[in-house]
Image (cartoon, rainbow, N blue to C red; front, side):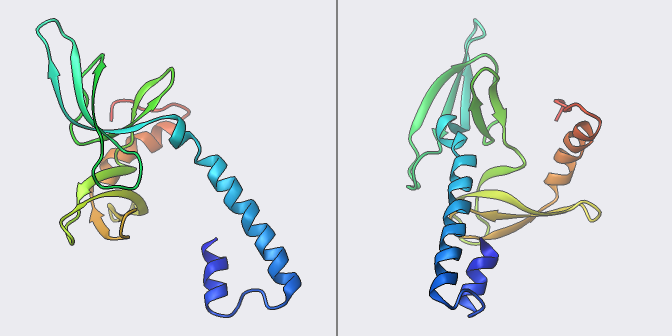
Length: 168
């Protein structure tokens, strides 16, 4: 999709009516496939744990922000859960599994450049140098981080050996 957009903007894209028709149909199929592949985000809520309370009986109340819509004022929720979860991390509520941490693939942070809350995704990862680049969904701001390699290496090694390392 990015290549097609760049080709169009730099006059390398379709030129004839037939090429436009064909390219438009191909792009529509690509967009449909992307939307279908991302549909699970609407089926399984993503939440950020802001805080939690543990009662004397061991019950845990998670204080969360629900990542829904396109407005920066996210709705607050209080949810009972079986264990405390890491504050400020994002989780996807997967049916039958529980809450799955999205760190370090997705993080919600105050952006260093604009000082507002943004949601960053893993964009580039240089395992040899131990540095990753995150980009924000909201404004495309970028940040370098060294926490990705340390937190993904065990997971990647576990996947390569046939199992996921749940120790972090």
